Image 1 (tube, rainbow, N blue to C red):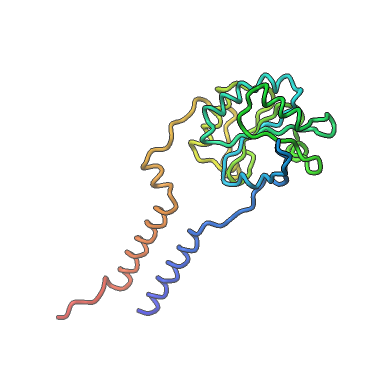
Image 2: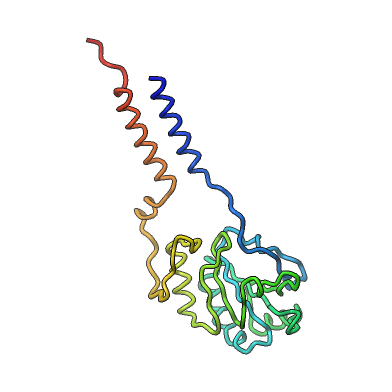
Length: 223
């Protein structure tokens, strides 16, 4: 009897420990300099879906994309965080003053900054041209990349594809080359059965049933 009870407690303890979330390192390292000349760590965006536009204030395509990104920010600003980074400060002379002028001219309402020359974002993510836009998951994993001018419908349908499926990395999920139309959010039943808490509760109930069978369902009736 004691052995059976100990076995049950061991299984229950393993279950509880397995459900405790573990912290993971944020995969976007380094910093950028915002328009107030402050050094900002990318790690402040941990836990959020982060949309980064790698741009250059003199880039004609970036200027053409500004209205599209403004609409994207209006439509999805509550779901994703947007950030425009002016790259190539050393090779093409990008400056904070130029970014401020760009923001004023094109009504940029999201955060902007300049690439840190000592740890360039453009080098880490192999940015070859502007604009290049990237969507990162809550742990800093790159999920989607767009190069060049991109239609608003393509941006929103692909971002919604990721958000509606709660995709946080691509280690176990391969994103399709063609995303198709946006999908509907998961139903309550789908969300319930995908919840780790619900799954843990179901396993606990199963263990209780097994334990009850092992112990004979309690005290035997007196004859």
